[in-house]
Amino acid sequence: MGEGKVEKASAVVIALLVTVLSFFHIAGWHSVGIYAHCPLAGRFLYPFFHSGVFHASLNAWCLLSVVFSYGVSFRRMLVAYLLAVTVPVDTLGGFLPFDNPTVGLSGVVYVLFGSISFEVLRKRYYQCWMLFYIGIGFFMPNTNAWLHLYCYLCGFVVALLNKPIHIKR
Image (cartoon, rainbow, N blue to C red):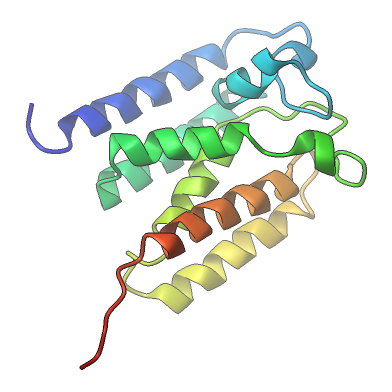
């Protein structure tokens, strides 16, 4: 396959998977969601389940936009998934709203958003919009803005650690 085709095909498969899964009614979000003291299966499954078709479609569209626009590698997608599923809900659960299950691919997407921070052309403009998107999540019901913030910062730190260092001579 050509350059980037595997990554794009993987993103399309993930987008289709989460969209199709959104049509099935989940009896209890505690079985597939992430929350304080959730089972290990919930940690690994929560990105694939969504509260509805609109939620799944929005997350799928964001994933496809990032992967297709910025040529995100399969390795970066895997790192984004691993960072999103390792959110410290047991540590943060005492004062953050992690008692109710959280589902959705947005954690992975926000890690990817953070990871492209230094690749966008208008960096300050991009950061302002990311601040707006994360901030507005704190005012929207049933949105886990703390998870979005955590995941975005993880992606940003990964991008910062992998940013080339230019030495002026």
